[in-house]
Picture (cartoon, helix red, strand yellow):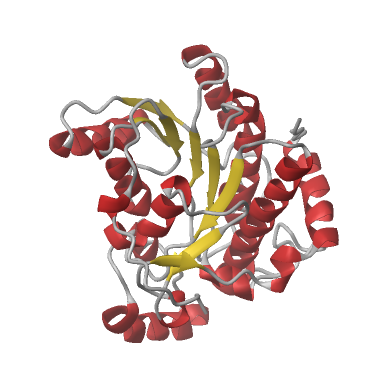
Length: 318
């Protein structure tokens, strides 16, 4: 359970972001859109990749209704495709050369795909989209982050990471497939392990860049409408129906932990933030529970090595 504090961080508490360039994946909907909107509102230049240019441009049009002079760049990125990740990284290098990024928010994801699906690379879709793609993207863009205090990499995980297990003999759900408490939970635990291990490596290298993490609690977004279906997920849907009116929050409030992790001067290296309320379902951002598996050094090292093999991307930090 989250640590209770008297802090009540809201979007109004986001520090001014003029002169900062932020890249946020999955910014065309849900908490990603709300985070992008607030960053733009506070003066940041925002790069908004989506799976299609139409989706990216639609998000930009909606942001400009509130922030007419926002500096926004659309792009195409499908995290389920390593070729797309590489192409997008090349787009960044070409259009924003050098060490040009102040903030990278790995937000995009999919949840509870009913039946096992494989990506074009042959990987289980949730593991690929939620974890392998963001790992590869972060590795490829790392040389283009500004090596200075204030630069951050934010990984958006989920409270369901506490229920996850990294099954090295079943990473792609080859042996069995459980949409939520198997594949999705594993992908989000992998995100949290990555976020924690990344900070350890940044610290060891003497880098001023921070790796922070966040989870939105039970935020009502488009992920819920495209989530688990079928009889095997009946219990999950019953629980969701009970919790929704009592313990959920909208996408705007669900984005607050991400914004806190991305901008608050109070964050700590490797800090992980979620809602303050019961079971971290809703509330203001506070330090969130980090499950023991996410702190397992041997597990983190093994997962990092395996991920480099799967993605074909070596993540060097220096």
